[in-house]
Image 1 (tube, helix red, strand yellow):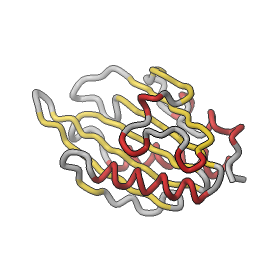
Image 2 (image 1 turned 180 degrees about the vertical axis):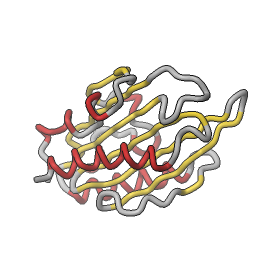
Image 3 (image 1 turned 90 degrees about the vertical axis):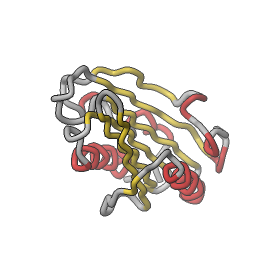
Image 4 (image 1 turned 30 degrees about the vertical axis):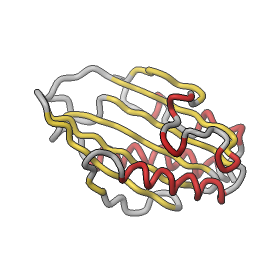
Length: 169
């Protein structure tokens, strides 16, 4: 079980990222962070949530992510986290035109999708959700097509997964 006292350390920290990243927001999840079927902040005996948002400047030649959002929700028990993960899974698969991504092993359960926005420039996005013990986590990141890879996304997800695993003892 992950204790509530660990909540603020369960998302990616600035020290987990390259120096070019700045903190946009690091703190408790706000109402706006909970959308759709996950908007009830008391769902499934939820104890609380935390979010870390980071960004950096760059051009279409910049490799890796430009924007990163790392979230976690903590529940009284693993049963609540399992129910929340199912909501995450449905939410991810309902995104506009997502393509499922093979993550390999991540947490106790995991789901990921990628999307491509086409405009003046092409922007690649990844959304990864997983459950670890009594917590659910989500990592969203985007960058320019051809410059942001699944390997980039997974490397950051594994850093956050390590934080969750270490907190669960």
